[in-house]
Amino acid sequence: MSTSSGNPWCIILNPAAKGDQARKTIDRMGKLAPEAKILLTENPGDGERRAREAVAMGFQTIVAAGGDGTVNEVLNGIDPARCALGILPVGTMNVLALELGISPDLERALAVIRAGRRRQIDLGYANQRRFIQLAGVGLDAEVVKKTHPEAKRAWGPWSYLLTVAQVTAAPAPHLKVKSGGEEYPGAMVLIGNGRHYGGPFRFFPKADMSDGKLDVCIFPKSGPLDLLWYLQGVLLGGPESLPEVKYLQTPALTVEAQEKVALEVDGEYGGETPVAFRLEKKGVEVIVP
Figure (cartoon, one colour):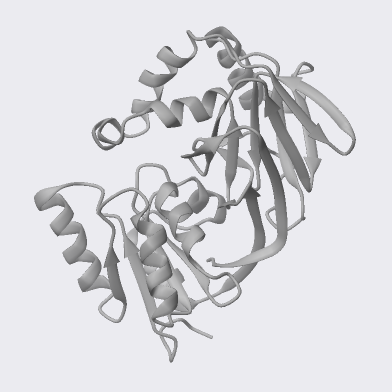
């Protein structure tokens, strides 16, 4: 069934920019999708609140227009049993759209929404927080936590690199990863539902968003030279080409540490350890090309 026929839909839009640029984004969205109800976000957390409002209004297709952070907020506000999730990738980072093959061109992405083709994919949970693409504990989460929203607006993905320089100077945490009766030590853990992490990097080459498993990379170190070595290894041969990196596929795991260590979900700060990760198999419907 197509989205536009008999199934009204709602766009939750994060204008991201301020002033005239935000107004242009809002106007363009209104012209290109006059049939959709548009709800705007202004502050962090608004996407979740707006999504709950859209569910209460009876919308069965709720579209997140922004980056991965906006998608995550909307995902946490919808009722997956009643609503399908749509994606318009107009944000700083759009890794999920890349994973699903959704064009960054707004008109083409809107055509995908209108065609209404749906795919059931696995829904991740980090404690009570939902995620759809990826999660992390350790260095990448500390970077997400400490990168200021204004820096992200001004510098885009480059803003994270500035924070990396600060965070890698701190001592690495001692993480304990438990899965399937086994325990693994590490300094940083990345968890994928899809293949991509941080853009076009395929950190999880075996990942399938409908296989009921999370793909897990456990890195023993997280210093600046270690990160460069890991990135080079992943790009040239995948994480399994690095003998010191543990690669798991599992439906559930826990990550603990003696100290409090940051968690990120879909590139947004999501709390601290301890974290229990699990999957709800085919727990959410997403509109795909």
